[in-house]
Length: 509
Image 1 (tube, rainbow, N blue to C red):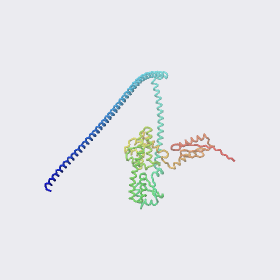
Image 2: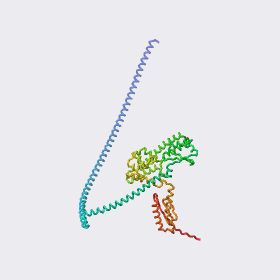
Image 3: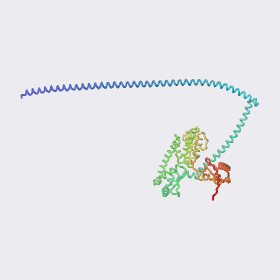
């Protein structure tokens, strides 16, 4: 084929391809335009729908705001109406009160006028009576006044003399009571039984071999214990027991705790002893502080100084006649609060005075003087007010009581200490009191037997019916009561029962 024909065919094919490409591009462009128009129409439709939704939401929100505004307007109008009604009611009430006051004022004015008339009438009657009395008695007013004054003076002098005798008798009785109290206190402090109970602690040992380990080589361990604790260790023939002796109950407790730990550990030597005693002393300090805080909480006395709390905690290890002093202080505080509330005294000061009234016992083995005065000084030192300090110092009447709260604390202390079961007494005193009761009953003629029962609170007397009749039984009961009251000292009361029994016995044979 000639080259010209090939070129022509190629050119025609190229023209056809160009035309087909142009047509294809036109078709693609038209499709794109159509798709774009459709997309735009879709966007416009969506926008119109969104516009409608926004318009509808706006209308709804506007409607809600309008309704809320209308509701607030209605509530505001209702509030205003209620306020207006209250104001009207108050105005009406004030008007009624004003009218009532005016009516009362009118009535009072009328009553005052009547009283003035009655007063004038009474003055006139009094004057007439004076004139009549002068006529009847033959004395003038001045003479009668002088006579009356003379009578009053005589009566006052007689009353004064009577009061003087009463005061003298009371002073004598109070002096006797104080003397007995001082003697009782002295005897209490030196009583062997009480001293023994209050100054020793017994530690139980697992075996007798432990005594030798506590003593140590050449007594080194026991000397280290005594020097570290400040108490005496008594190791005698008592089986499996060591006695700790000392006047300081806190030191005895530290020694007891340390000795128990050393026995449980088994390592007993001077270095270990010092370490254990120091650790136990720190533990006891924590225990005392916690005990003091708990006591203040139980008694309802907040805001105490930390040192007072610590001293209160020391009373945990102090007893008085078998009664724990810390529990006694808590009980006294509660009783003082109840008594103060009943009589109108200051409850807080009474409770604080009751809780701290025996605070001096925490240091009375270190400071000379009565524990009440020591306690008052300690309380004053740590910022306690003067009323409470006086209540503490005066609860044994060693200083003058300056307030009602001081009297309340004294009464509460006496109640707590004297209730049955609060404090123990020695067996010897108990047996002696029962024997004295029986001896008093047996001292009367006609008594056959007698029995002291109810811990000495009752005595039953059996009489011989042939020697004592029914009338004599009543007299015997009164005589026994009188003699008991004269010769014995006892708490509470003692019941005396006289029993007269007649028996007729016969036998059928």
